[in-house]
Amino acid sequence: MNVKLTMEIAWSLMLARWKQTLVAAIGVTFSITMFITLLSFMTGLNQLLDSLILNRTPHVRIYNEIKPSEVLPIQRVRELDGYHHFVHSVRASTAREEILNSEAILRAIQSDQRVLGVSPKASAQVFFNAGNVDITGVVNGIDVLAEAELFHFGEYVVAGSLPDVHKLPNTIILGKPLAARLMVELGDIIQLTTPDGERYQAKVVGLYQSGLQDFDKTQSFASLTTVQKILGKSPSYMTDIQVKLNRLEDAPSVAREYQLLFGTEAADIQTANAQFDTGTFIRTLIAYAVGVTLLIVAGFGIYNILNMMIYEKMDSIAILKATGFSGRDVRLIFLIIALGIGFFGAITGLFFGFVLSSIIDQIPFVTEALPTTKTYPINYDPLFYLIGLAFSIVTTYLAGLFPAVKASKVDPVVIIRGK
Image (cartoon, rainbow, N blue to C red; front, side, top):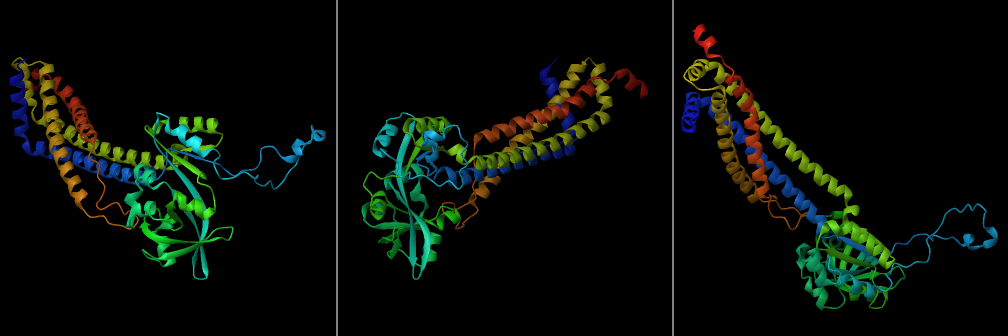
């Protein structure tokens, strides 16, 4: 078999029906272009939505949960052992939200090689006083430097300065919707009341917007020291310890380990956001399904064109076989035609897919719900381009295989006798 001669014959057959060949190549190009664009945009959107959760959510959260006592008082009476106890409307025990031995727990976590960073937190339920109206909310006391490094909090501050909360006493950062409800601006003094009736004043030094409207309407942030002062607690008072790990996949096992080790509750990010992960998976699956469907449709176009080419080139096939070309050679010729169409369509499709993705990436997308987003999100993962190229080659190969096998079985005697 002369490879060079085989390539020349395949090239001649393609040029003989160049319009149909061009239509098939355009079909593959369009499919790959839309596959790349759709997948880049959909995964970019997934990354954007994931960042809203991942950036602001610890991999492991350590806290104390207020829950009923596991052993009720009546169960402690020995004389009633063996009786059935029917207890209704059980109330929570006198357990505290405070994490006991919080400083020792912090040191133990910081020495764990699996941990990227840790940020203590203290939450206080308060009422924001707006004239005669009290708005229920939460003040989160944070380690400002750790929060900015681990949870990118500074990216969500749309007005004012995050470091001011760390440097200045009695300062607070409000959610932008909450500030609008309170009708306050930067530099204003707000008054808040604790459930115990204690009043406290704080200066507004920043506004933040996370993209979660309901969250921003009630949440505010201050330094850990400020919240401890509001609650009248000691410097060791903490209600949460937020942990970021080097590997997100370790979160479930680390949470179980910490729960047993420290005697507290520990929630991992994967369990807490299982529904969100499911939505991300489904959106990605839909993008792949649509892209593969487009490639399959293009493959049918190549199949039909090669079939028509075989019917029209029966004479040429018969002559090739009569002059010494085997069925294998004829099959290879038509496979080369199919793969040539697929490869050309794939390369041009990858190029136009990148160009179209770049155009979408430059389109302004400004919304108050997503303050960190300025343009439509696009993911330029090289893996998508490799997948697109592989799908294109495989699809066009399968589309050309059946017509090629059919052409290899043509009997030249029958064709020449008919002529």
